[in-house]
Amino acid sequence: MATARKITVEISSELLEKAQRASGTGITQTVRTGLQLLAASRTYARLRQLRGKVRFTRTLAELKADR
Image (cartoon, rainbow, N blue to C red; front, top):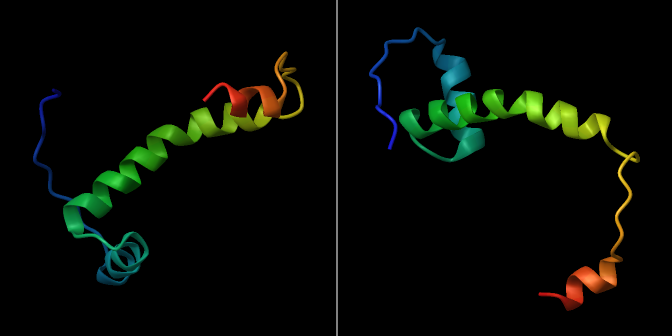
């Protein structure tokens, strides 16, 4: 398990409230979720660039049957 760090961050009350409403969680989990999404954004962008460029050898029906 990774070592956790305690940090102090200044965030506007309005932004924090909007984020908490969107996530439906408390402050800590809202901040964690936001950081995880930001960290994953580069991967999402690279996956979007592959759209339509990857050919699969198996059909959707074959994938479903393989469950």
